[in-house]
Image 1 (cartoon, rainbow, N blue to C red):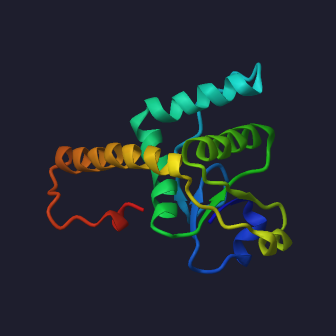
Image 2 (cartoon, rainbow, N blue to C red; image 1 turned 90 degrees about the vertical axis):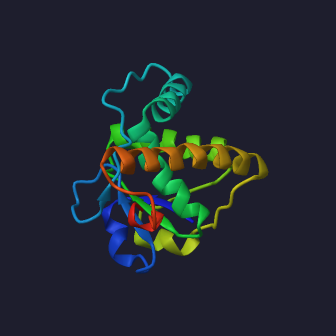
Amino acid sequence: MLIVGDHKCVGFLPPHIKIYNVSSLLEGYIKLNILPYTVRYSDEKEFDLEYALYILEHDNVFFDMMKIIYNLYIGNDVYLLITVDQFSEIVTESLLKFIQQRYGYIGNRVNEPEDLGTLVPGDFTLFGVFNLDQDKERFSYLIANSILLGGGSIDNFNIESLL
């Protein structure tokens, strides 16, 4: 299940949920670098397209986005910790649209701890699984490339250590 919300809900989450910090100032959670450096927001559709290209064209951004997707794929629940401001709202909404359009996975947006009781589980669509398979290949390549360039070995490597 994919959940997006701010710091107010973190204390009410079950301990098994994987928490990633997307834009919050709250420390102590794995930081994902998936925010664009600048936002040229003339039109919502145009921004969504630009942000999707930003994710797909930058290996480091794609890698961090795949941490979310891979966790969902292996059955983990994921909470994306955000700051509630105009910039973060625009980017978060675009990210959720990207995940929904590319993988068919629908996320939940929570504003208050009470919203946690109304969550709807998500799942990948058939078309989403096709895209997921392609993206997992690229993700695997990036992992192997990173390990080998760093002087490490891919023998006995456990992907869980990256997530």
